[in-house]
Figure 1: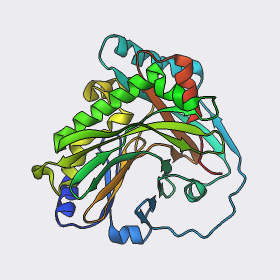
Figure 2: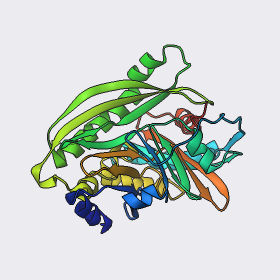
Figure 3: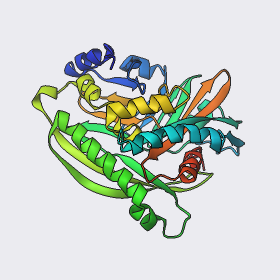
Length: 323
């Protein structure tokens, strides 16, 4: 895979303990690095747990129009069948299949950024906005943590938490991603272990409330990777939770099955404060293209996946957490 020289620049900045913010697209061939000065000058808007460059006054949440125009089941099925065929052949055992959906709303990208409730939010003006609940990796005091999020269900379904935790397909998907990320972390860390397994988080939205399943994995950064943020990210990307396993073959399948370019969707955004790193997966993602808005969404497909359920999951994720 193409190696972007910007990863080297990240290493140099982190070795000098200089803060920076970054965006890395899905294929890792576009990396944008923002200095502390650019962040303060609001070249892009950031709202992370430990770093924000916005200070919004209390404002009334607007009522808003929201329409989505998902591709037809027949069109979705074409890519789904390519994925399933590869799963049957054993080329992959988990493939994250996504699509893009045109949406119509009277909210601007700035409104969506301002009013969405999410752990991680970024607005690149006139380009895209995301409101992601999913951490990629954190590095704190030379320890590395990751929190794969796999498996969602409508929270209103009776006994939803038990159903989610025990659904054979969701369970298999979650186990696979936890295993994949545990192996990934082992490339850059020692003493890697799963600390929390199948935690359930509640995600509130105006359209539909969801339960999402996460786990936590941690390890101690190997000496040769200390203060080398770029090298660490290069080793770990693309993120397993939005790709699948095994990584290289699954990437080929995705590029064949998906009829659009993911761009920065399912890439990584992060902030290095001079000591520690916090980063997220760019999901729950809306992009502006020729004055139209597109929402990119999808989910993990295993051999147990059912076409209709996966199509519905893709549509369920087309929401904004504004309430």
